[in-house]
Length: 554
Figure 1 (tube, rainbow, N blue to C red):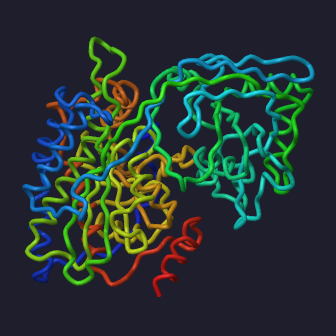
Figure 2: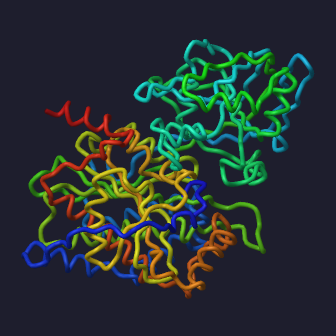
Figure 3: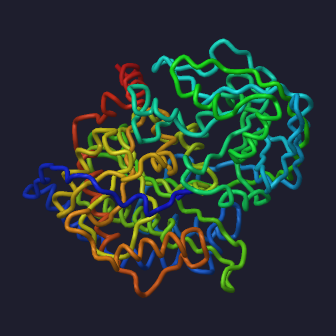
């Protein structure tokens, strides 16, 4: 799970209703046998292998990847899962960049501010570049850096930023987010750094100074500053790739204030004006100069893809996703340097394998085809999923649903499912019915402002218009869960998330994650046997994209 404080997934919203799935037809008798084949014991067996020290933390383009690919493809073959025309493995071309040095000066009318790597700056180069030299690039404050014609919002209106460096604020405009423009407390996709970077590149900006505000982000500058010299992966760009900026610099809000003061401007005052509709970008009396140097290595990683061909509508697809990768071998913590990634995300990969086995055991396949994709490089920024979305093995316009599984919690037998960005799509109707049949309810993410929806592998599909859902099991708010259970969540986030101690343990309660997987099965099974084509709800920012796909097929 990419940069996600996992405890935020445990939420507090009312239980949704939904009709139970009928279980008295011959088809559903087979469905029930397949459902019963999903067991905690099987999931524990998969996790114990994938999260073993032998797999070395499952980083992309390492021996750990080779072992992981062998294991997943071996299970697919054993279950009788079909391979696509190109085989089980989809190549994902990656760049591995490590910034070795960066020195940038922002010179204003009243002085200069030095930016130092790991101190008051994170830096990365764009595209394939290993070295970027910047000389006297004019600075422009573009507020939140959002262009959304469908909302009547354009932070670049009336300004030419070609070749210039733009200063961009985090997230959605505060205050305005409570109006009709965005989504209240919930972060919208317009507020993600990915969206802002795409807009800046499209507008011709040379670089971005991205302001980290810990009051908005929910985590301090120090939490990200430690990664300044760690390797980062990105996708290799093809000739038809969208334009991007040459560099991206992240800096703390205190440094942003210093820069604006040196230019004779008031950062906080300008940030306040950027919240209002009709904001106009401001030329700042400062220029950016310096260099960013990074080593660049090319490598190839892989998504693993298998499918079951549908019996009546084989050219329509229900897709299950889970990322197989973790972060590999890193800094020693308590004598251990292998970041095993048992919860994140050997559990989701185990669920994917159990689902593949369950569908393969059906006496007859569903009406629609069912696809299983184990993604690479999620921890590096959803790279495997972005690559698949740009190079789909099965057409996105015919993909009726994506069900994503990331970091299942083996702490108890749950009575709920937390749906990230609940209220987004009609897939929730199917999951509500599936959860109810299994004695569970749905609830919303209690802290949607942190944008969990944009931090796992379903999001690149959503950006293309494909309805996608991301949900994970946990306790409902009523009755209140035992303190001991909630302490396990706290302990995991505090002591094990993205640390070597995220290991498979004999104290795991596997009933909950097996129940999660059964909810995923019933949800996908219902969609795969339905005539309807699910869509986003009308107020979703992705609805228009899906409507266009549907219209083109007519």
